[in-house]
Image (cartoon, rainbow, N blue to C red; front, side, top):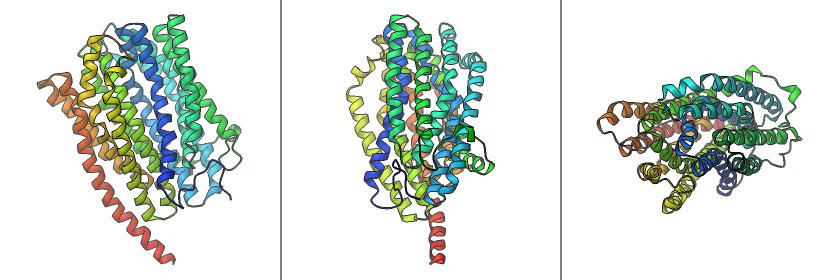
Amino acid sequence: MSKGKHEIDMIHGPLAMKIILFALPLALSSMLQQLFNAADLAVVGRFTNPQAMAAVGSNSSVVGLLVSLFTGLSVGANVVTANLLGSGHREKISEAVHTIMAVALVSGVFLLAAGIVIARPILTLMGAPADVIALAVLYLRIYFCGMPMIMLYNFGSAILRSRGDSRRPFLALTLAGVVNVVLNLIFVVVFHLHVIGVALATVLSNCLSGSLVVFFLMKETDEFRFIPRQLKIRREYLQKLLQIGLPAGVQGMVFSLSNVVIQSAVNSFGADCIAGMTAAQNFDFISYCLLNAFAQTCVTFTSQNYGAGDASRCRRVWQLSMGIGLSADLVLIAAMFASRNILIQLFTTDAEVIRYAMYRIRYAFVVHFLCGTYEITAGALRGMNRSMVPAVISIVGTCAFRLLYVFLVFPHFRSPGTLMLVYPLSWILTAIAMNTAYFIACKEAFSRMQAENTDIK
């Protein structure tokens, strides 16, 4: 069977340029997705008040907590279809695609219902200030109305990326991002809908991006074509999806839980601190989008080459993803840090809010590249069908450490700067453990792979 017109040959030929061409649209896609929330924050920060800005900002960790399990499953979707491609089992791809899309739809409906029901209890538990919580609950409930389309976008994009197509998901988010910004300004500036307006704009733009990805899949002419009437969850592919995606999802949930605890500590400093830290967090997110793009690239390229039984090429994928990804992120961090005073004013001109924002920029953002030293390696492990190892390491090295730090260290040295130090410390600890595990796993997996190839010869 010939390759589709959007497919990249990941198992033959030079790797470096293919990795860059695959990762770049993926990074831009992730950045645009993050800009949905950043646009919401910027519009309410410039045209309303710190309370409305805090209401939007305080929800990021809550959304992450509820969505991360299912976003992790989409990583499994990528690996399942990429492995089928790499091993030459294209005839099985159609059933896998329809299983994945069915799981996406069920996940989205579940999240819609769960988000609406638990919005107020979870924000109350986090200690959201009294002058913020009503608006925060309203924003969160409207936001979760778009969950089915968010899940269809994430899972559908994972399917497209598994064959090397990171361009069309990027195009979908580009159009949706423009629509989101325009609707934000119309709803807030013209109709004065403040928090309601930015939430509605986000929902509508997410519906657009999800619909476009579904449309792309429906227009495919090969095994990747999506036909809605063929939606069916098949046990074989569900088990594989859960095997890879569930550990990643649980890791994401626990990771988000640690961020919820950190957000609770941030909440204790008041609305100005919430608004400032949330504005500065967008700097971190942009850096993470770039690093995560190379991590996802590493997952996809490793999955195909692991399926093809090429150990040396798997190693080269990790080396190039790590080298190019970290280098690009260091350049990005340097440029954003140099422009920090200008960029932060895109979100707010309030001096007190800016003062708090600078704590996060100075203590966490400037060393955010450390995050990539374990995220990219975790991607390589997942591409080798070893999803449990990076999940356990991340839960212990990042999540458990942060919880202990917030509960045991922070109360004795209570300041915004001390709180932000939890991030680089956890990144260093996790990176040491993750890379050690990678080299151990490689020695075992690649030795077995080479032995199998020798037996075949």
